[in-house]
Length: 88
Image 1 (cartoon, helix red, strand yellow):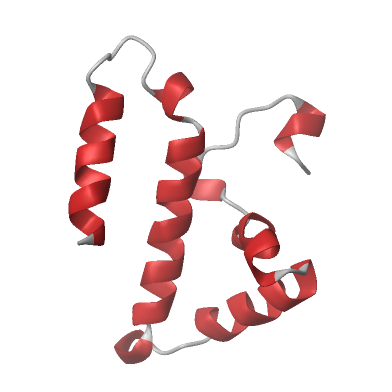
Image 2 (tube, rainbow, N blue to C red; image 1 turned 45 degrees about the horizontal axis):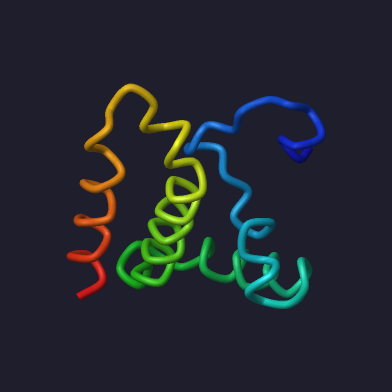
């Protein structure tokens, strides 16, 4: 259930990846199909799964940055700095 509906905060460990990526894929069913394919990859071929998960976590954190950083004014700058390094 959507956190906006329940009013509850979702923990980063419980991200619904297909829902998060549905807009990118253009359709929730396409996102679910892709997700089920990468989830089924064996460990020796799961680089796509790792990138998919880590990108979702970074997007989730970026969307929550003000709430997560409350009381830690340097956190948003640190997050942006580390994000920039990870992308290059």
